[in-house]
Amino acid sequence: MKRLALSLGLALAVVGFSGGIARAMPPFAQAYGVKCELCHTQVPQLNAYGRYVQRSGYASLDPHVLRTAFPIWVGEQLNYDSSVGNAGGSYKPQGGNLAIHAVGAIGNDITYHFQQWIWEDNGAGDLDTFWVAYNNLLHRDGHLFAGLIEAPGPSAYSQWADIAPFAPPEITVGEHVYQEDGNRWGAKLNYVKGDVDVEAGWLYANNGWSGFSNWANTDKTFQYKVAYASATNPFEIGLLGSRGSVPVSTGVDQYYTVGGYAQRDPTGYIPGALVLFQSGYDANPGADPNTGLSLGQAFSNGWTTELYDTFFKGRLFLSAREEWTQDGLGTFTNYGNVNASIVLAKYLRFYVQESMQNGQTPTWQYFLWLTTPVTKGPNGW
Image (cartoon, rainbow, N blue to C red; front, top):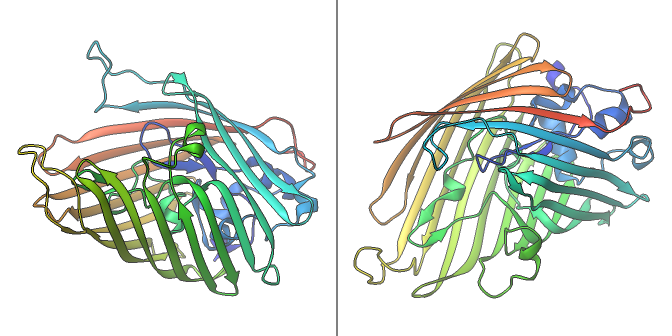
């Protein structure tokens, strides 16, 4: 149960080359003088208390303590993906991934998080995350977020130690590419009281600074989550769904999803496990790319199962995942991923993944990730 000790590391920086999200929060660990691993199964993957800190918008932390640490920190990644070559056909590690972050509290009622890529995929970076949360609602159990925010959903969608994102929330149905797990502009209200977590949000564009004013040609979604989620119990279970509309070449696609998930953190000699599923309906998924004719309505679904655990006092993380998706239009896909990550030094970690998909050659991805504060904290970190 030591993995469930109350702590304060929170993970927040993006794995740019994979589409998955990896995040860590050095200023929170600095402010309280604790190790990030106390709040994580493996950075960035949160344990039960870390998920509580996340869904409460950091309001469960003392704002006065948070302000004792300098709020700005930086992250740098060296990435490699064997499935992506440059124009010359070679495959080289890519070091152009530098981000700056700011996190913390303003007064007693407002918290914030900001992440800007300075360099991303060896090019000019864009905004990744930019939200503020007002936390003095519903007897301080309500947290209103606005900005470029994480969509309501399982913590695993945004805070996971695997390199690859999950397949079901990003399934493609005709011309519609789902965005159930990404950062998007909009607002959401989280009600977090005891073991109850209720989240509801309205979301639109997912691109950076330009997405803020992108109202016309974008996916507009109402998304929600209702869960049993304790700050001290390693088991969590919830329901989730969405209702939205997105423009396609044949008009507008009206769609909805329903799904659920169950997660258990590893404790003792029992490994951790995650199971999630999503069923969707698209009324007008667009045109057939071969014939140009309108596709019929589609009922899609997807499943994910994963086992994971840590070894050597949490320094080594191993996981194995299998996923299935079918788009309701005749395409069935089976995915598999094996991941490992190791803590090399304070603020320095290495992640590696083998990716498999039916009918394709396995590929390899890795990244070396440095997340470092700018100054030492009040406790010498």
